Image (tube, rainbow, N blue to C red; front, side, top):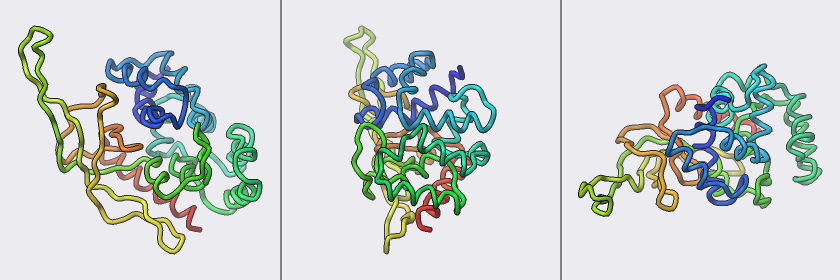
Length: 261
């Protein structure tokens, strides 16, 4: 197993799991593993229970002849986007959507048939944003239909940090008498999903507040102003490289274009 791939996947999966939207109730386990930088079989077992995430990783890995669905390259392809998305053809996704995602049982028959037709006629990529924008009914633990707000929260966003809000804690109870700062909330400038005349798009950058604390636990710290970060359901996932920012924006826009056509 790819330890770094498992940990990267956990960073993006932990927030929907925290809210009970996807996977089993294991978010505290995921946070603990991320804090300790331990990617092991327990993490793999937890993530394998995500009924939408894991089949997508398997699909991308299989079409790229990669044995491990949690290979870091595969994980990055699904959540952020990279060239591993391109080998997945329409005919393979059509079979996958029925056999693995069981979408023919989860969304209205008319919507499912329209999806299959659209996939056969238009360029598509099996990216997380594609699923969020174009499978109108949520396919995790919450089977409700997506709204613009839930699409905004469920997609992976990106933004540049403009402010870090911290608080000071002391360690007297541990006998050290030392004080240290912990980061509580992160302020970013980011684009959000908007809808006008039934078309999706991205807004001009706005100010958005993100969290890093999971009931007193956090796995990411030392964030700095001007860092680019990804976020999911209102929580920071990871610090992004410039390449990852460009890829995430590119594949998000591709998913929007598919929706609008």
